[in-house]
Length: 197
Ligand SMILES: N[C@@H](CCC(=O)N[C@@H](CS)C(=O)NCC(=O)O)C(=O)O
Image (cartoon, rainbow, N blue to C red; front, side, top):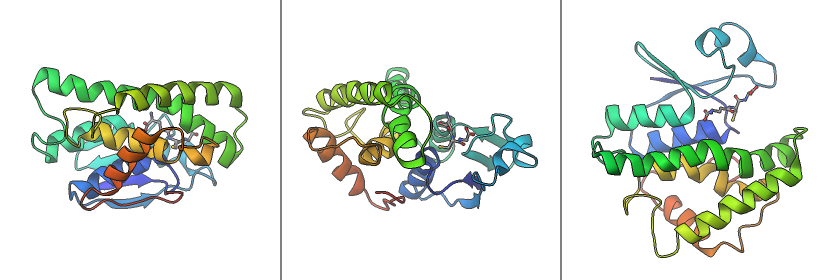
């Protein structure tokens, strides 16, 4: 199974992290984003969006980190990481949506601006980040994990850009429940870090 990957990408790291935690072997295929390889063939033929990550598992070809987590969890993870009970599945999916929306547009964009110099609106990104971090801080009060009271792909999807928030100029000190959850994720068996963590 091949993951088209970028080591500094939190979206790619979601997939690397989940594969490590659930002991799914992955072959990493680095994509040279700086050199523009993601916008031309052969990569653009795999993903017309021109974005990593992309997963290739035999005949299955997928873009989007959330979709890849769903595929891997259902294909290889049994009921543990993404159960099939409708309410339980939806509880996890809420967080995948949060990862792709509020987290991406908040802490992830703040990091793109601060670390990579993207010309995006910093004030808006910081405001969005503080809103979602406040919501998450309250959600994690009295909870160990984001969903179902146990580690799921919800934690894998949200973890990277929250743990990397300081790279976007967002201090985590004011968020003790988020910090405790980050420590719990880091303590999971087979946890792997990424650059910046
Ligand atoms: N929704 C996608 C977003 C993927 C994404 O934004 N990837 C970035 C790297 S983190 C990328 O490839 N950017 C290149 C570009 O947009 O030109 C996901 O969750 O995988």
